[in-house]
Length: 471
Image 1 (cartoon, rainbow, N blue to C red):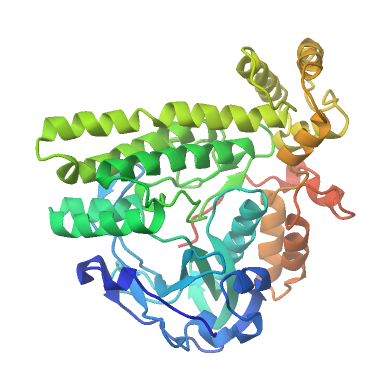
Image 2 (tube, rainbow, N blue to C red):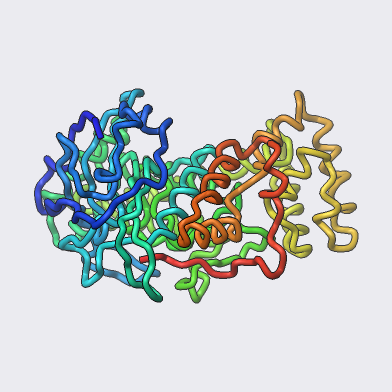
């Protein structure tokens, strides 16, 4: 792979990472290369080889490292985590002048593996490839998939499974948990270096640690509003899975809802519903409070003053989230201007969807395509009691309200049963369903010839009720 690396993170204090090369594999083979993303990064797609993606060859200029971080996992504090199966090759400056990480996920053991094998099996690699690229196509900030390769080796989870590596691209892999690791060690010098690096890299307009906290809070508020607008459930919103860049990161037990219900959970490890769809804004706020706690020594030497200033910054999350949520959901029902009763109108529809078990994606898409979702909002009288107020509100809107809705409501999402169908086929060596799914999801707002089949909700026997972390 021919890339021009400029590795700023590896110039930070070495206690923030461990220098670690990827561990070579037996027989790498490419599954997919994201040619358009490669070109964005200034990389010739044809120069991307299986040997580089699988970790057998380290590109010239790369400085492979595994990053240190800690985190709260399901609310429980873990003082050291880190990249246990990922290696950051380095950073490139893309064609737009933005710095981007290139990381190999599933690249073998590191000093942070905590007894794990450092590998990934093919299923989670392809799930992350598909879902992250779908999120990008939906216009929601996310890490990206550059390429995937099989390793020619088996990994052992419930049984032997085909190994694979994902090449992931991110604005950075700095997490809330990265700051927590240094704060827990009372490493104020390291914390200051990381803060300065994060500000310079992501929020150059921010002034000091308080400015960083404010910027991260606002970015996360907008991100979670985006998730909510497409029915996405992250599934494992631990502090080590929250990127301070405001990108969606770590697609483990994630899923898009079929039937709408606010308490929906898919993650097999979320037994208490901590990370349910409706809880995501509150959990984001909880995670940001942990970032604030980590930054307190840098905000003010007087702890009470630091807490008060941090609380003021965190108080900005709720209004930014509400404004972003309203903007997105207004567009979903065809509104571009703000009126007093809009939130009640939106909530009223979603309550009716919930009692009817209406499909989240298809209900909103029906508003755009026909203006009639009565076949989906089936609770007796529910649609009829909502639609007249909606149509009256639409009549006060300028412009093409159908176009507004079509651009806000995807026709197709990576439905769980389609993702599982693709993974099952790929595990048997058939990658055709993967490529078909990627083709359909590349333009999720378009009613292409293949869209109708992929837009169908699962039959009862196709429903996927749990998704798994994949580690």
